[in-house]
Image 1 (cartoon, rainbow, N blue to C red):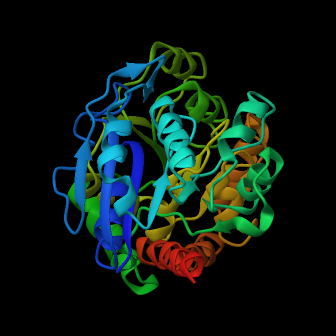
Image 2 (image 1 turned 180 degrees about the vertical axis):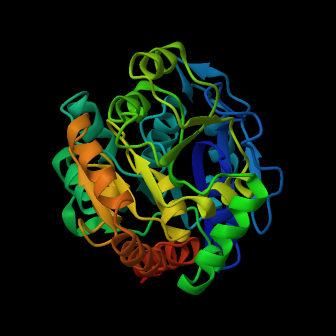
Length: 369
């Protein structure tokens, strides 16, 4: 059984689920440099660590909310680093992890760069090239992310794409149960009989909630309810709603997974109008509930998991007219939504925590031979 050390900035619930599953197949230790970050709800924090050892460095934020600078990692690696078969860095641009990478490079410890995805930018290119140098392998989430790593300097033959997910296989609905559960959840939530568009995510500029609101009008969407889950409306959102005389817009506070599950099951379509997402796990979650997906060409999960016209559509980021047209196309065609629902469920089965663990295990075994 391989002994693995995985280093990340903050332990999120979806990562905790992944580590719990992977810990069944290896001797796994997880280090989080920080306990939490201000931009995430305090409820969004795992409390159980099954099948792996968890260590927090309790580091303070450095420059940004989700980055830190702590020498505690060097101290840990000095005492334990040589006992691991592989050390994996999950956020290679985090200052604390940069120190760890340099230490592993100096000691000759085999390490792997794991990357959730990203778009290529020339920013800090020479520094990123230098950081990537020396890794025995690179793990990432999509074809585009692999191209990005290659442009930065990672050898293509050392880059492995894994199916990124926050969903276990037993959470994926069957097409037969979807309709029954949709009706049940609507009754429990006290929702109307109108069709439902769902958005889930943070209320930050990058996510494009403002784009979604500006794409709506009261005439074409009068038979559609839009549920926006993630908090209270900002002043900007209130202003757009008032200016456009929008009705049927419902803001829902942050929810834990069990509560949120009911809204996914009650919805008819999922929309993520993001300006940029290095992945977008809400896409996985929505597809596991059989929802047609409408997202942008700047969402890596969309580019990887959405087959245009099959289980959803990709629209250009910030194109309000195209987003409006696409939403109406999907929401006013019951047969199309049914077909897309079935396709989403098929694709979701390829992107689970179990298939993600399997990909990691195969890469470790390949590197060990």
